[in-house]
Structures are given as C-alpha cells and as structure tokens.
Length: 297
Image 1 (cartoon, rainbow, N blue to C red):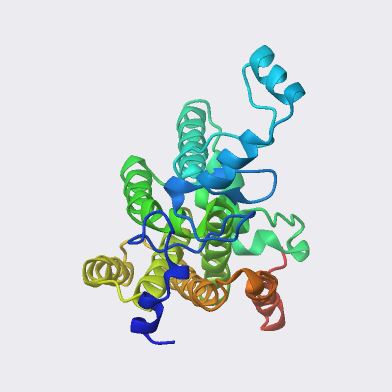
Image 2: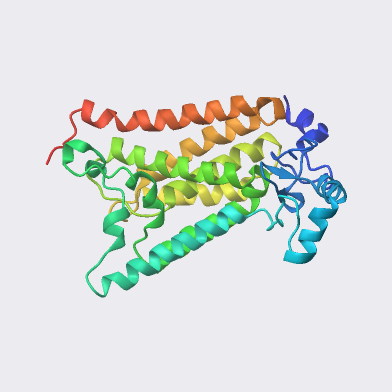
C-alpha cells in the first residue's frame, strides 16, 4: 500500500477527528478512534457513541446504583486522555530515582539491584536475576540523566501512545528495554548499564516507522535521533550505544508490525508477530554462554 492509498483510506484515521491517525479500534463498533475519543472498557476501549448507547441501555437497577454510589452501573471508566501508560512510566521512574537517591545517604543503592549487569542474569553466575533485563529502564545515574530520558519519553510518548493505545505502548516500551539489554549482553557483556535510553530509542524507532508509513515529516525527530546516536559513540562519554542501537532496532521492527497489522481481523497476527520479536530477544540472551562469554563466578 502506498502512502497516498493509506491516506485515502479513512479507516486509518479517527472517525471523529479525520486528521488523527490511529491504530486503536472501538471494541464494539470496530471504528478507528484516537486517544481523545477512547474510553476504557472491560476489554479494550469504546468510542463516545457506543458509550452513550451503553449508558442509554442501562437498566433501572444500574441507574439506581449510579445514584447511590456515585458511579456508573456499566463497566466503563472515564478516559484519562490517552497517555496513561506514559504517565505511569514517569511515576515509577521518578519513585525509583528518589528511592535510590535517598538510599545512597544510608549506604543503600536501588540501582545495584535493578541495573542491567549481563553476567548476573545467568544461573551459572550463582545469582540469576533476570528482572534486570527490563528494570534497567527504572535506573539512572543522576538528575540530568533521568530528566533527559523522561523529556525524550514525553516528546515521543504524547504522539505515539494515543495512536497505539496504552497496552501496545507499554508493550513496546518493555520490549525495547529488553532489546537494549540484549544488545548490551551481546556487544559489551561485562559493562553495567543504567537508564531508559534503550526503551526510549525503541519508541523513537517505532514512531519513525509508523510516521513514515503515513507520510508524516519526521526530519526534526530524525535529526534529534541521529545526534543522540552519535553521542553514544564518543569514547569515554559513559553512554551505552549498544543499548541505544538494540532498542532502536526492536522499536523499528515493532513499528513495522503495527503498520502491517492494524485491521481488526489482523489482531491475532499482530500478537503472534510481537511474540516472535519477544522470543527473538529471549533467544539473544542464550548466545553469550554459547559464545563462551564469562558468565561463571
């Protein structure tokens, strides 16, 4: 499908806001809806028209329950603007940073427990701490480090999450964090790594692929991405270019999956392909022992 064909297909855009491209469908009517039009339901999200219809169909008992308890009798909650996932990532990262900062005053470092240290994720090391593969995204080396990463997350997340929906956005973030860790394990095995850069670079990669697919101008974002990639290769800069590249590659692959499987009848295929990417990341972690990397104590 060409960019022009994609733009002419109204199913690729919110039915209430025709200029807003989205990958999220109303779980009742299957029409495309943007972040502003999404209201979480028991499964998926629903559009404003389906929400209104559902409210009109409430039974007298449900209406009495609403008056009594101050909440709707349906299973639908209020929408929070389409960036819930990004906000929770902000909150968890901020809490982790503050706990680590406070702990250092009494000799405790949360970073030591959550940072990615490749040898420690293997049972042969005597530790087996696989959570480090993704919890690395909660760790940061200082205020400027966490500030710049969260600023980058805000830049890309406010555009990407409303298009993908919260579940897909968070899944992308976690897979990209794991992809960054896998690249570190393969390319710089004994280097401890902290930071959400791999996950954030992955979001950039996904957004660029999706935006190019719909014909959006990504020149500014490509420049920012390029500068940050170059900085990672500066000697003694203390930046893990391996994590950046790993997250970016995984994010681009995920973005490609989303652009090819956005129809409602392709959701199973989409989940399978995301599972294949996840399996590929897991498989990458089996390579260091096979290559003879020093995982034993």
